Amino acid sequence: MEWFEAPEYWLSRLVLQRAVAALYLVAFVSAALQFRALLGERGLTPVPDFLRRVPFRASPSLFHRHYSDRFFAAVAWSGAALSAAVLLGAADRVPLAVAMLMWALLWVLYLSIVNVGQTWYAFGWESLLLEAGFLVVFLGNADVAPPMLVLLLLRWLLFRLEFGAGLIKWRGDPCWRNLTCLDYHHETQPMPGPLSWFFHHLPKPVHRVEVAANHLTQLVVPFLLFFPQPVASAAGLAVIATQLWLVASGNFAWLNWLTVVLALAAVDSSPVAGTREYGQVPPWYVAAVIGVTVLVLVLSWWPVRNLLTRRQQMNRSFNPLHLVNTYGAFGSVTRLRHEVVIEGTDEERTTESTRWREYGFRGKPGDLRRLPRQYAPYHLRLDWLLWFAALSPSYAAPWFTRLLHRLLENDPDTLRLLRTNPFPDHPPAQVRALLYRYRFTTWRELRSTGAWWDRELVGPYGQPVSRPPADASGTPGTPDTP
Image (cartoon, rainbow, N blue to C red; front, side, top):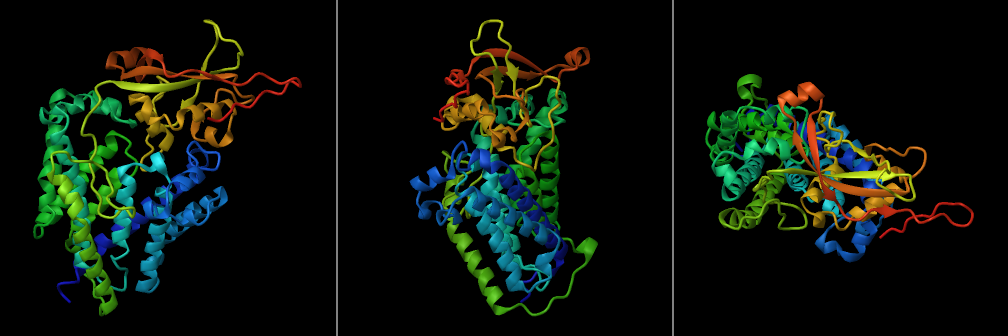
């Protein structure tokens, strides 16, 4: 079985599996803490409405059998508990078959959430976590040596992720080819981090080097992942170094962290950790690994065809199980940053002197003096979708008006997604949204004002919404939900 076993990767497998479990934990906790406002029975895009429109075969999920907010919470917290157990090593203390069932259950639980998550889960890293999680089911535990076939499948996933992202950039915005995209990207990316201001102000020649290094890492290095050692290890380490640079420069949920984890499948850990002896490999396990290898090869037809076409799509799943997907990001880079700012007032009738108070969000820019925070790998879904909403109102059409109505109600689930509520004692009478252009301040402006951002009003973002007048008893009306 020398062709099947790769004991020299035992430490890489150990770290890879524990890291995937940690990212599952983050994903399940994120779902548990945010779903009521976004997807719950009174959410912005309720799951029950989605389930009435979409059949099981198009979006397999446990919630097709039953949905309630309590059941969703049970699924999310059960996934978090199981993820934590695996992170602490539970899957290495049970028989191989039980360990595989544990990993498979994590995959089923998270697939059930993603497949009813609608626009809030329409991110490439959701499919990436599901595809990686599915492959980890077959990576074994402490009872068997790491199977080389699964390590190669993980490298193939990393190849598609990196090469697809490189191609979408090279074929897309001309600024990637003339090496100028990072003159804008650090400032206009969806959710800047605490170092993004400093990255933006790096000298322009450094930005050119950044883009060139990105092209090298995404268009050349992925091929080296399949070379003999130590070339494959060097390629994996190059991917890791590049991804850690991206972690430092912004917030992309668990995309960069999971890419780092996948790169471990190419790193031979034997020079620092040696190898281990394992017992005989069960025939049924060999058959399962061969079976999943054949499945991935067959399903690879669609993403490979997508990579080779000039009309390449990014972040698409070709099947409802999110297996063997195509990836890519930032084929185009925005030059200007726009932000939707939501304000409220407790005045029934507004005038030019009306005092509007601004709602604060956790991750997206708002307060000019507030340094962007580091949230990744945690995923602030509403903040991300508001970045898309600023690009075009059509992104937010299904849920934005409902969000404003929830703020008019001081809905506690919605307010928990925000950083500050300017109306803690009573709901506002009116809520409105404005569109601003944001830019990073210069070094001189930062020293003189203490502000990281400067902004300029573009105009209103839709129509204000107001609470219906009080009834005869003096009880405020409840806004209708669109």
